[in-house]
Image (cartoon, rainbow, N blue to C red; front, top):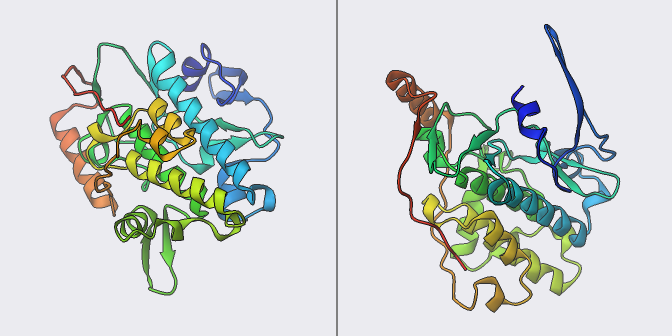
Length: 286
């Protein structure tokens, strides 16, 4: 019902098109347009198909996802927070155009509300720390999730994986930050994309945008329209609006314990459906 309510009144080239549905007792079904190339995870992270071996294709996917989220966050009323942006929820059509899908966890956001306190839902690795711990939901959750997804698109690596060599869990966000701090961020670019120096330079810029979206303090993260503008920039000056943009340390939830603690606190306070109005500074990185 949540998905029907969300998708029944919105349309965008980068959102999956809902054809119809049935809610009749135990018979519940949603019918979407057919997506010829499955989802992003299948093609990029699981089977590593050759469909995404071109930088131009991956760039188009990243820009399309950003455009879809900017539409949800800024162009419709009420605003919509998706809450579960990840590779399996990005579908690819015949032309490899990305479509954001699975709005089962999405929340409507009235214009006069700055955040909603709700039960934590989503996927580890894509959860913004402030939301995972406190349940305070803003549009910056989707921005954080997009940052993690953008790292995956450029690097071809999973945001959370197990390193067989080291015998421990691998966090892509942590790896990206270390490389950025040592001025070696280019090493994170997927080797299959490093055929052209121009592509590598642009790919590295996308990684910097991803890190901006992943900053621990949500107020520092750009809006999705700002992130889209930076990715579309043609020069370094355009990327930062003529100003050097400092990237602060990203937030990272390394295990489920913090999430469980946050959920327990929410349950104790019985805040699962409470909406709260606060004053939050507007974030701008341009």
